[in-house]
Length: 302
Image: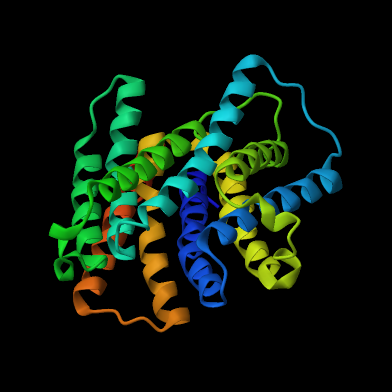
């Protein structure tokens, strides 16, 4: 498969796995668990799965230099922080609006990438953002919400989640020398579990909640919320710019909405479908133009 298509595809798959998390958490809440317990189980099983992968594939950790340690520590902290502050935002915001606030990572991530690389966003990136942000508003059903009664804390936590996730994407765009994707996943999962245990519900590990049925949700959340995204971002992130990764990660929203419709039987309107189409167009534009540009270069070389 063409590398110019493969790595963006891996980013899309990683972000899609994030998209189904909200549906799994809602199922856990329906069965009587709190969102904090569900999220804590996600990071516990993410760590457990990463540990098993490490033992099976290599059985030892790499030696890290200071730069590598800082990169992986920040990746783990941002992974956990995103989950924590997004959960806090749900205490103040309707779920649809919380998704919209989280999706501000598209423009935050792009401009953060521009700031770090001291460049201006390209016309194509700006054009994609217009599609993404417009589509997000329609897809989340914002026009049906009363925004006047929402506390400022909701906006603050929502933007914090967006910023944390955009930093996570940027960090995972940086390669760490001498570290395999499995090692990277394990180290990030350990750091994330420690942070989550400080702020959420570590007691589920010893109070019997896990064996009482929470483990089924924790296993699914750990697989789709820790293992798959961190592995795929670790593989594809260094091959794709941080700005493009932020745009491609917008796939999370259509997947989140479609999962809630299919699994939770939630209703979807024509405006939401229109918004999903706009999001898909916006996230596809950079990859399509990149592939066309590469094909034109090959044609010239021939």
